[in-house]
Amino acid sequence: MTHNRYSKTLITGGSRSGKSTYALTLADYFERKVFLATARALDEEMKARIAKHQQERDHTYHTIEEPIDLAKTIDSTGRSQDVILVDCLTVWLGNLQLELSPETMQTKIEALLEILEKPPCHLIFVTNEVGMGIVPEHKLARDFRDQAGLLNQRMANLVDRVVLVVSGIPLEIKNNLKQGSMP
Image 1 (cartoon, helix red, strand yellow):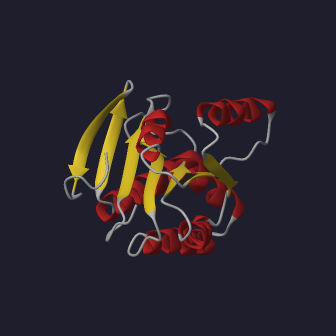
Image 2 (tube, helix red, strand yellow):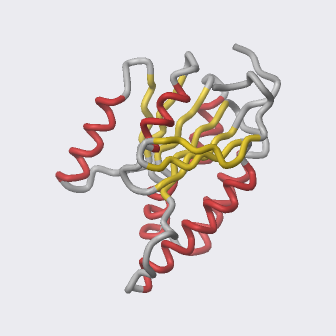
């Protein structure tokens, strides 16, 4: 499959809305595909979640676990792939917030946004919409919500397509793709 231009899709929605399932259906269109997982199995509950997600993918996915260096991994891996599905940006952002200085965190974010200018393959990003609920009580949570909202806005501005998934139903809210370029 050859494309003159690689598509970039952002899939957003609330927790358990069906974002990841929808992202997998888009990625299944491609032959050579990578699932780039950002989560870490730090406790039993997270291990169980990761195992469930792994069972939802078939054997055709090459899985890479990368909690910090998304841009570097996308750039180095994407040249030999048709699509990379990143699940998910909000977990990645949490990793950055907890492990890096604010300056280094911004450098990682800018590097990811820069990849969107010339992607090495088709890209599908999953992210959580975290700004539709109540204002968090704690400063760390408010900072996270604000950072996630800003990242989602910047990503949405740079990608070709944005899909909001609500109760398992995908609602396309932006589509700048050429007809027939991707399902």
